[in-house]
View: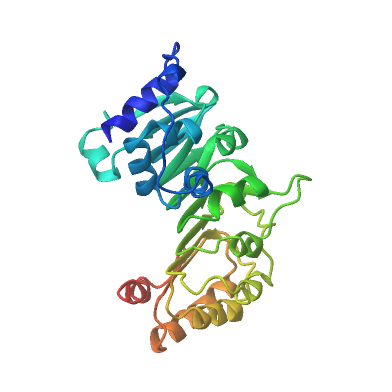
Amino acid sequence: MDAIIELFQSEVTITPKPFNRSSIIKQNWSLPDSIIYYITKYPSNSKGYQKLIQSCKYFFFKNPIIVASSLRSKHVSKALICSKMRKDCENNDGKCCIEIDIKNVTSKIWITGKFEISFDAPTSLICSKLYKCETYLGHEYKNIFFDDFKFLASPVKRICLSKSSIKYKDGEIVMLEKILECLPNIKRFHFDFAKLGEDTSMVNDSTLKNIMKLKNLKNLQFFILNQLSEIFPVEELYAFIKKFKNTRIGFHFNDNLSEEYKEQLDELIDEIIESNVPVCVIRYKGQDEEKYKDLESFK
């Protein structure tokens, strides 16, 4: 991993040491050139790629990719990148992280762990530098084009979208079911509507019904929607819970619910507690705390 850090440092230095092309020696491969080309250009996993570039600089020269555990981008094109696992990084007080300027990085970046984007980070620029993001995508306080989102999110297993808005290039909002449809590997999905407030234009009263028709959510383990309005009919909430009975579900509502809707939620909570699918937590201001604790106890 230290070798990876050295590669990062050489990537972001103001005056990088030029690559000495005269040191290249012709390789006599035991495999056909076509196979060498394929494994060079299309590495199947990050550990295998790291072994390749550590065994021979030819592979990095032909397809330069920096493998990192995490990347956090917050302002302009500056980002913190780290080769350590999250716990190791925290134990080291983040001293292992390196600040980079995305604009100056010439290699692609392969993120094996956590990738977080927020505020005014230039998403399209980051996408142009990214080779792959494998595990976790966090996106906060930011608009993002759907094409960029699909590129970033399609390989990942965990996604947290907080106060974000996903749009087509013509400015139209992407519906929630379309977002989920492009996530073939998704296991955990969390969406926070807080920034949108009452603007829930990415969902309507048919959203949950449309999500239930999707074929790519069989491995979904967690599904959480936060700061919801009362846009979803309560009977659709229950149908969704029964459909995904092996998924831990969280429906957390904002403070602007009508008394009628709260009464309907109370009836739903009673049904959930009495049913055989008690894997859903419903939360709203003013609810019966004992019943909420009953829902929480099923986690």
